[in-house]
Figure 1: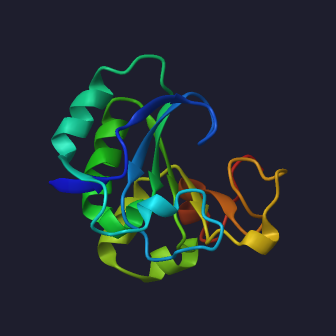
Figure 2: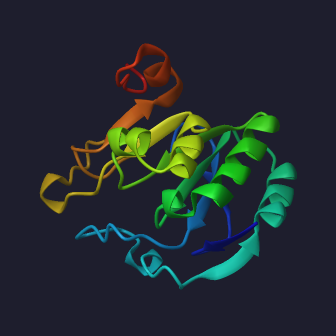
Length: 165
């Protein structure tokens, strides 16, 4: 399946989730949050096309990574392709984090492809970035309204369980 990326995959990140991670920067976001750190990723037709098989092939040969982070842009605007990558990452022992401007509740109640991707994410950083709530004290997120959600536990318990709590 073809997806649009904003940049090549970036290994060895320590900023985009716990552990040492490889970040996959998806192109396209309709949230257009004021003050977004990646406004160049908003254009749905920007970036470049790549086959998910090629991304998975790159992931196979990475060393010392604990997981991948789906970021962007917003990977939930390309849910089918992001799902293929997330499933592959899990199959080789990597955990999956995802950043989205959607809320957890909206993903649960919405599009089936987005829901399927959500089910294959370990930690979700949800909600739009809000410039008025920007804080340097937020771990792995930019504004205080955004949440770090333990997706598996939240689904099991039927209510939001914050990651690390």
